[in-house]
Length: 403
Image (cartoon, rainbow, N blue to C red; front, side, top):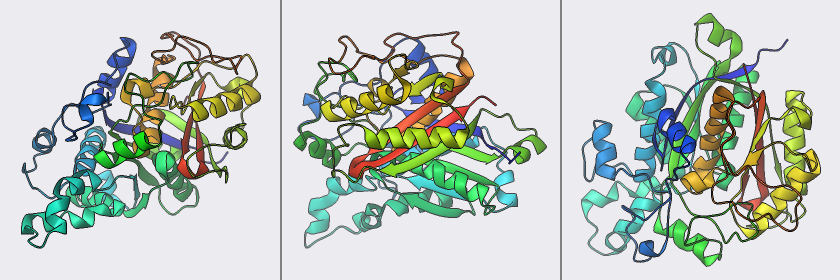
């Protein structure tokens, strides 16, 4: 049997807090992290509810033993450093210094969250010297380099930016590199911070709800933007066993496809999503009936939920397994969405629980299936499916299985 790819450590920060326990407790009590804005500086911010991490930039920096103020780190990087620190706290760091491994990080905002604060200065004739160091952060890869440098990671590095499927693709790339024998281990994930650019951009598309989002609900009215970061350490199962590492889950299948339909909208019949899920299941050697829980992309936008709902119904039938969107807990965290929802799938396997789809009330009239609206514990879940669908038709499905 071929060596399987396993997850042996995770790190996460979201609007629910830092670490797995914070996520788990919030979900068990149905407590959303989406609320009024504390840190994003925007004249429009009071009009929205967002999935904002409760710590300020200075608080994040202090927790990381970094200088506060103009320290050269954007909020995107600070969130990613926080998630990476959470992962490394559970890892034998010396292991990562003994051999070459891959570090693959994803984001879409890059340093936009900082640059929009200093834009007028940078664009002016008298640019302050202290702001020049942030110009390079507009390159998404700058965050990846800063993380690697901060933790002294001597790794093969790559940066992925495929909209809302970015960090799922990062996990896929890491798994492929391991399977091809390039490395034995990889740390994969990513992060994104809130910015005025993304909030205003999504609002211009008329798909942002000013109240808590309602994925897969007949009366859904758009998404809530969020911010988060997460990383997974993946490696060959034989390597994990040899060092006595605890296996959290098996990454048993994955696939990405492209709708080639529209820049911002999915194919309305869900054909791209069906193809992605089918391919991931085939890699895992599973049938649809083997899946015990689906973490749906579920943005609460009219076209996404209809397309994904149709895809799930077509592939799994009217007796589809329990499914939910966890975005009402965290907001839509853009490039980070894939990895934090992958971590939630691992939580579901570990805890044998179905995470509820908050705020659901009314079944969509176009579908004959509806999401799990309440927490289900003591479930029997051996395999879970995680969907991430990004702008440009970039679809990713991941399958995680019990070890």
